[in-house]
Each structure stands twice: as C-alpha cells, then as structure tokens.
Length: 572
Image (cartoon, rainbow, N blue to C red; front, top):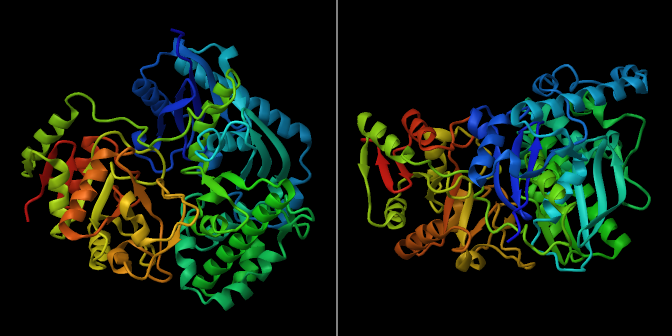
C-alpha cells in the first residue's frame, strides 16, 4: 500500500485558517477564530494549523507540501485597521499612483520571506516544501475540486468574484479534469465586491463581515427607488464589450470610491441604499454569468469568492435558463482559501480529478477530546445545572423542540465555515414567529431585519421551496422563494419581507443524528423543518469545545444544551 499524501493549506489573511488534504480529500479544516475566540481573526493561523494536523493524525514529516493561499498577503496590522485606507477618494488615488513599482516589489519580497519564515519557525518544514498559489486560483480550486457537478472530461465554467486578491477582483476559467485555463480576469481596481464592502462601511457596519446585513435589509426598500438610487453605481462600473470582465466606467478606481459613494448616497434612506447596492450587484452578476456562458457555450458552473456569499444573487443565477447546473463553494469568501490551496497543491502531484474532493459534509473540525465532555458535565453540575443522559438524544431534542423550547447543540465534529449546520447550532420551531424575538433576546441580538434560516429534511424539501435545478442545497449557499401552502411552517426561519429562505437540506448520509432529530420532530409535529442559527454570543465566533458551549449557556438566556450524550438544562 502506497503512503498517503498529505498537503497542508494555509490562509493568513482576514478570517485566517488551515486545511489538511489527504489523497485529494479534505479531512480537516478549521478557522483560527474558533480557537482564538477572536471573530474573523487575522494572520498566521498557528492554532488552526496544529488543530487540523491533530484531527488528521498527520506529522510534519508526512506533508508533501505546505501551500499558502495568495502570492501576497498584507501583514496583520494593515488588515486589522482599515480606517487609514478604506474611506478614501480621488486625492488618495492620485497620491498612490506616484508610488514607484519598486516599492510594491520590495513589499512583495518582504512579505513572502516573512510568510516562509512563519512556517519554518512553527513547523520546521523545509523551505522547498513551502509553495504559494495565486489568490483567485485558490478560490477556484476550492470550488472546482469539491464540486459535485463535474464529470470526467466535461468542461466546467469556473467563476471567481471578490473584493480583490493578488491584484485581481474576478476571473473566468474553463476547467476540465485537472486543468484550469483562465480566459479572462478583472483588475482589482474594477471590483464589484469592493463597491459592496465600501457601502457596508458607509452604512456604519463592518466590511468583510456585515455585507449579509445589507443583503438582508435590501428587500425592505421600494424597488423603484432602489433602482433609481443604483444609478451612481452604474456610472462607476460596467461589463466589458465581450461581457467577460468588469471594467471602470470612469477613471475612479473602486479602491478609492468611498467618497464618491458618500457624496451620491448622502441623505438617501438607509434601506434604499441597501436596496440599490443589492440590485446593482444582482444585475451585474446575472449579466456577467450570462455573457460567460454565451461566450464559452458551457452551462455547468462553479463559483467562488466572497461576492458569491450573496445568496439572493445566487438564487437569480441558479434560476437562469442558461445554467444547467451550478455549485457555489460553501463559505465562498476568504475562509475557503486554505482548502483551495491544499487541493491545488495536491493536484499538482496527481492525475485527473476522480471526485475524491467532493464534500459529503462540512463537519471538518474536531469533536470533543477524551474526557472533555465529562469535565464540562462536572462543571455544569457545580454551577447548579441539571444534567440528563437520555437513551435517545435525538428523540430528547425533538421533544424539547416540539414543546416550544429552544435548544443549543454541541455534538460531534464542528462545522467548517460561516454557517452552523446542526452540530454547533441553536435550534427551535420554525413555525412560531415568537421564537425570533425570543432567540434574539436570549443570545443573538441580531438586527431586527435579519432573518434566521431553516434546516429542512431531504424528504420534505419540496413541501417548502421549489428547486427546479435539483440543487438540494446542503450548505446554505442559495436562497429560494417559499411555497405558499407550507409557509406557515417556516415563518420564523424566513425573510419576513420577501418570504425567501436560505435552507440547509439535511440528509442522513451527511449527518445521521441531525437528520434523526428533525425526523423525530416531524413525527411529533408534522413539520419537516426547524429553525437553525449559529451557536454563539453576539460578536463572538461559533462555539467549538464543550467548555465554549457551557460558557455561552451560562452567559446567555439559553436554557437547554444538547452536549454530545447529555442534555444540560438551567433552572427556570
């Protein structure tokens, strides 16, 4: 038997993390924030690297390569404080244009050497095993090598779109077997993603994190007013004549568009501003995808990059008649770069893709270590919490949900990515709108306009939303309109304005326990969907360990915690 090949992928920018690939399959992936407890942590992900190596049972000597995502990555200090370079305009653009190319080259070499030194000092890996993969290539590798809609010899259209990385903001590629051939690229100065993030900043929210709040607010705006308000954005960015690139409509770079946006949106209602940038983004993406399909004749699409975190835009793209199949990388923003780097590194040493990278699930983090659950249970008892060990945990969870209780879960391996998928979740009935205020008061403190999402049994999905392309989305990457007949079952887990949902379709193959718990809930209530939101305090990362879970239980208004084999409850 040949020795297994391990490749470690590292992303050391915003929301940094690590991934470990064995023989082409992602066996572990963890964001640094889950261990450091610092939301969207930045920099060299020392803890995450050690964690994925532990989960995968690999030693440094087993690694055939250590692959960084992005040829260049800014130092932590610059990414941690954007105030000096985010809210800028034409004056700063002209000043920065005077910088000599030698400065950029010097910074590139300095950071490259620092990043290599980080790995050598931490792992002791030899320098000749440390490699780099370009930012957008890492994005696309993450999507293409994990996509379920790829067949041997079949061409696939690969699209990336984000704020920027390695001087690019979007790419178009033709992927076949092991090869990725880029046919078009958009310069970082003509970035659709940067417009959205600058609007996020303009509205007093956090770029690279709160863009989803803008998307959630947009449906409250009057569509006609939003369309008119989007006109300044159309004067800023457009598609190229062949439709394959975004290009500037003026000399103003999107890197320096903050002052332009402020001037044009001043005294415009906040919901209309959100509606305008969402409408503009949807229109641009739909037109771009259509043009790319028309140019290549390829109707099977894979997508990656932070702009594709916009599930409403993804919904419109998936509905296009030109699109035969579509796959959006889960957590398509930069936290997926480590996965792409590791997969691309593996592919450089292997033959054509054989589907080994396709995600069966996203439970890629660690489970409770030996004795960890027991220590947490002892701590719970000392705090005066009641502890039960049901014979059937899934039935016990279903009983609590059916009687209207809210239940937090910390079970099995942790989910990778931005979405909680049942193992580190807060669960409740999706049919009772009162649960929204209850959960927000208990723990979440979400903005009033932000919806929760549902987890839906695979056998019940058709009751709740139409899925003409048969995507059965397992990772919450698309929005869908709900069916009228069963909307009442989802009232607490849908957008109250436009009645769309961001569903997770749950299968027994992906998560047997979660599927069994929802099935038991359905047997009790006749409803095949529950509300699912991430298990965390407001402003903190999703919990990881039993101790994290117990801490949040104690600090919040939550009453029940399903902790692996135990139900921990606080007194009334």
